[in-house]
Image 1: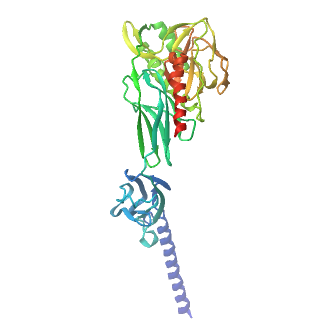
Image 2: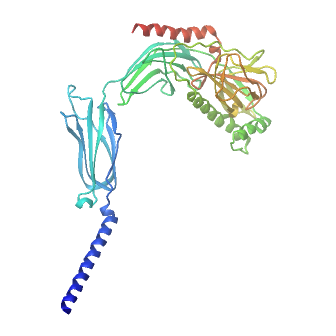
Image 3: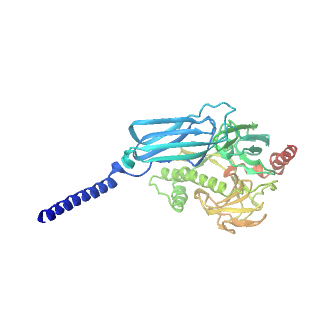
Length: 459
């Protein structure tokens, strides 16, 4: 009886040891990185477009390492392995750059699948590792978008404006715009009928040479059509002004502008002036551009009724658009900038009236421009009123034509009370004299749009 009892104790002890061993082994396996249970990750959209010209990019990753992957193009008739590999040295990140399968033009299906398989080196799953299979909807699109120029302004000058009406069409259209010299982008607004668009464009003053204005259309498969906008260029002569900057101006005006803009104040006076006149000016121009693009009305337009803008009442012109300003300190040239508006001076705090109705898209202190208003008039055209002393409108207000919106002042980087009036085309200051000329507006803008409508009606 004692032997039986002792034998039973031994068996129980052994079984207990085995149980603890199994539990311990289970805990070890569960927590061991060699037995991790996370499946690999495949970085690719669930639905992609492919033009079968560009390489297709995707990424496979895993914490422990990938030992096998396979990518298959499946359309039911032409199943082709695009890439597969068993890795002798597992990798945690694999970036694939897949070439398109070789298919005859008659065997290219539009809707196919891309199947991506991957297995890691984990000992989980009875040493087979963690696996993943991801199916991706693949839209094959090898057709470039339709992108035609319907009508446009005949010629343009540096600092000047124009209009372009275009046709853009594609089932998978992803982007479209007008570009100047491949440097400046102009957004398109829906015009008149479906698949037609219009944009005001400009030749920015800071771009000296004219290269080409182009219509660019892209689809989701990265098919791109680039169409030249036929434009002649004309010369426009701008004058140069030499301005003397003294300590008093820097210590008072430049310093105040920097303080109000929350910028550092340099001890060196020339550095302080350049921080305001060069660095802050660039920031201000970027703000104007950003605000103007964000404030554009993107609703479809059928026409564009804009009246010639009028000068400040009973004022004289003290500076013109496109003046090249050379700044001298102690007879040394320290900076050169373009003056991108017209300056009108009248009595102090003279009332400022709008010419055309619009919406206030900016009302704030703007560095060298001082207290500034920007009013959007449609189609990306806006007017800027700088150095004001007070506002009569608020951000977001809709203003009527001939409404008083502000009063002139001497805020910002100025020598005295006046109005800096700017005309903006998608945030780029252009020559206001064009937009103050009714004949120019008719022949260069509105007539072009009316002519294009007749062309569209024949299609």
